[in-house]
Image (cartoon, one colour):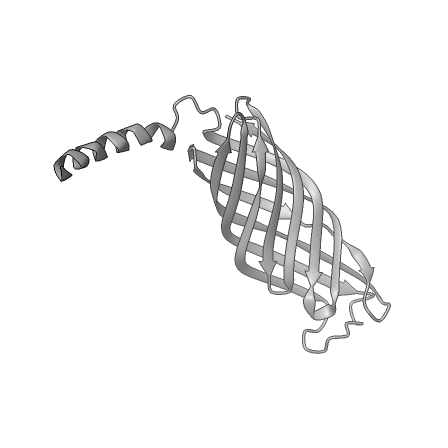
Length: 190
């Protein structure tokens, strides 16, 4: 009886292959994208956290239905505001990231996705003329570069077209705090 059950294993594996890579899947291949949205820049040591218009560009490759990789450059914006002591402040965060992306197709033409990778972020912060920072431990202006973990998730549609749209949230940590971007992107597949 055990031998008969073991004969079913190769048949089940053979039947599962189409689920792993569909030949008619138009989502497979290379793509580029541009996106715009609400960026968020924080400099924890200074008590500064503000939102601003951010943008990104990316290139990706999706060789199988459920996995791919992306290389992106994101600019979280250049917000201005005031420190807790009333001095005018300005920050900027931008950087590049390399991500592994996992997809969950939802028929008929939507993909849920999550990504995890490494981000190289640069954060800049100035107050007034650059000498009014209230944290003596970090000094001002701040110009910090870091390599940290980044992650994101979202939904993408346009399964059967050369153009797709994506709504996404991503967070790219830095030495100064966390930087994030909630964006709407257009992808061109080729």
